[in-house]
Length: 407
Image (cartoon, rainbow, N blue to C red; front, side, top):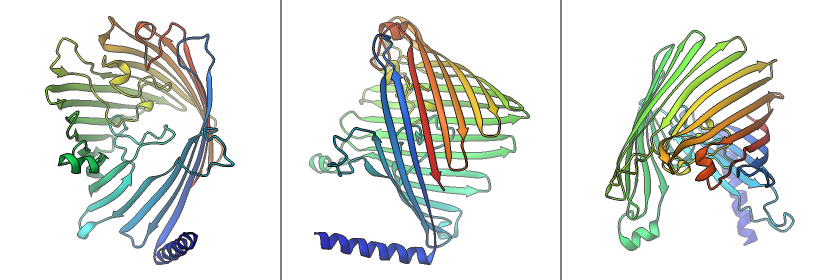
């Protein structure tokens, strides 16, 4: 067995070396450590939870020719100290391929690019489809993406397999319990100050718990001198569980005014909730594969929507101020007012959150980020709870993150 393994390594090394000799290649790597201090249970009598997250990524990109390339990114993601004994445990059970894809550009001499394998797929500002970079693992998809490009405009067609139960399918016939995501996402530059994105996404599950949901929407970004604004709208339709119609929507509007080193942002986002009086209809909008950490508070009480709002929907009214300090640092403070669009146990107030984030770029390779959050519970958090936590005391979260990149 050892001889076979050694032989495989030698053959693999020879193949990669030969491939690199024929074209170009590059290596990128990242080590990210985050110390967390969390007291999220709305009970000041309990002690905070302290833990360390470590994410290590190593990527190799190789290009045998100008139009053909491949990318492999290995990732180890762990909570430090979670292994019982680092002297004895060498199983590498936290190691995975975060990305591994092949890409061909200008397929058949057309402005068409194809990417197949495992890949990140962030679109727009990631309110619907995101890579969830904040997470200690992050999201990637298995599947295929076709991109048509013309100047500054692109149209992406994609089909991703979220779940595949081949053994079950053979037993029951068909793609039983499979889940797929098929969609199109267009990004169009209207002029130097305006960009419009439009999309349609069909996610479906076959068999038990059948789901067929279509999400259509748009994102518009505009700049007018020192002022910039983003408007978004999305609507969901389809069926869940074969007899429940889906009719849900989301909209968001944010504006930012910049003056020298200071920027001020105000806006709101609305996620529709389910009306309990319509049993045959589900009006709770699902944010699909979004990077919700970017939008609904640093403390992540609303990551899984609509689950974390008890299907009550969410109205997020926010204000943010950011200032650049010197050449390497910036500080931001954000206030969130969280409300339910449909009553949850007779109440509509989730609570308020204040987030303060300090960024410092130590040099080109290393940077630090410090975050402090405080959540003031409203009636829903006090009575029903959020994410399984209920109480009347304020919740706290703090972290210190160190990131070192090799590009």
